[in-house]
Length: 511
Image (cartoon, rainbow, N blue to C red; front, side):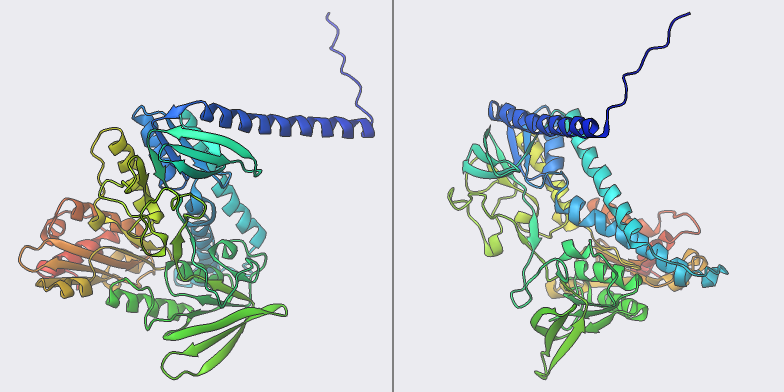
């Protein structure tokens, strides 16, 4: 019979504390050592492609380059991959939008289904924990993909010192060396555009970043800007209990959307309880005691009002992030607002230097940046990367959602092209009625002579998913009749898409 192995005695508390401290120090040294080694390794190599920025443009570019056999490094200053989108943008906001929608349904929306839920409460800390867990899981997943495709991940801020070298400053502010590459891709994304009369502190006066991480549900929130970010974040906090007022300088919400769709959308949001002050200029905003004061002015009458609120969200748009990149020193051509000028293959005026995503022209959308990232990797690898900018969808993830691709009716009218409009309301769709979710419409804009689809615009609970069919149809040059003669499953919300296509060239069946 063998003796059981003797365990060492448990250390005394003071000794345990010293052991714990030494262990923690070893872990920190190990982590720092790994970072230094990675930077040192990167500095010793010459890469085929060095990407500055690990967001939704940069990290797909790095992965695609690795898949194509290129030697690639990706430099990211945030300390985690995914950029604004994954860390403080698309993903955390969608987590909050979905969670807040579920809460509102439980608290107010189950009635038509015969479900009664009493004493429904929101645990804000748990909601935020789910958001953070989602973000962490996805960012660490990208690191795993980098390892899989042999992408060197360099943590630090990059500055171009020549067309083939990037100086890296480590996360701790130290000089981390130079990374050399035959081709450099600028993919540094964008930042919230400041509004000088309303200085942000990310506590009570916030950008989208601060709005994702409020410590308590405000009683009142003022949102400056009736664009995508303002309406999404305003919707989150309105559902959770805040009284939300949206202030917009223009006379309409969501500039750039089809006018008819924007009006339909605004009616829906108003019905939900969001208040709008259109044609209104912001004069100033500041902290006042435990809350804030926002002074606004009517563009027509000049009358001023002061809104007392707990939180002010500044959401007037985003600007390219090119600060400290050294672009001016290399004489890289830039346009208005710091947008980097590129040709159709993402080349700047400096040979070997490319740019993609929010720092170049076009809509500031994560999926647009991803397509450009994949295309630029293919181009650098000697292949034929391409992005069809006529088929980039845009989605607002409120409820109902709004999605669009292609031209608005106003844009088509401005070209002088004869056109036809086909529409179908979800009130006439069987699945929408069964779901008690009938707000919205599908709208087709087509060429009158050929029937070719020029634009599709949707307001619906699942518009963001449904728009993919429109993108695919337009990518292959389909006509409305092509879509209308394609069988759609019954009963589905997508039948409204088919019937709107029918309305564009003939007549729908159910309306």
